[in-house]
Length: 160
Image 1 (tube, rainbow, N blue to C red):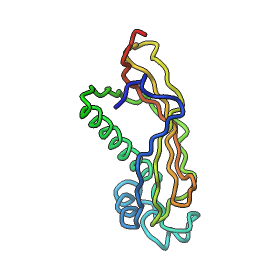
Image 2: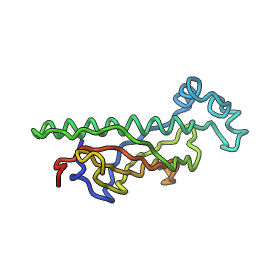
Image 3: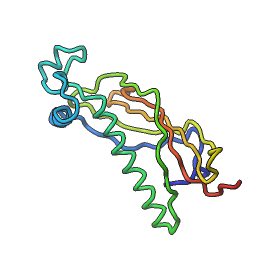
Image 4: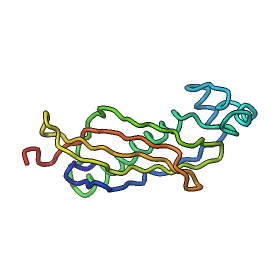
């Protein structure tokens, strides 16, 4: 994990990709979003989506899994260099969540995060606020998922 001062607006991180198989789509849907077009191929074909589609919450959950893995990898790399990884705080929230195109069985989504803004916290000088645009793009290069997240990030020099 990096400190606020180590990031730049426009910086992009590729988080990895995930293939949404029919089995994975159905398993997630059965537990968390049991709508017919997420559970059954025929119902999916008859729906607006035109096939078995992943729940938007499934698509979002995969982003979270990959984002956490990326942060842990980054922290391990810093520790291996003998650096103290920055601590990240909670997220005060997100906005503009959009599921732009359906993700169908067999689609592979590649996830990324791009820094949109950085600022010092006015009330807590040891923290900064990072805003990142998070996206998912399918194997055809089509944007399928997007949201803007805010997160508290430690500052290296809180009194600068």
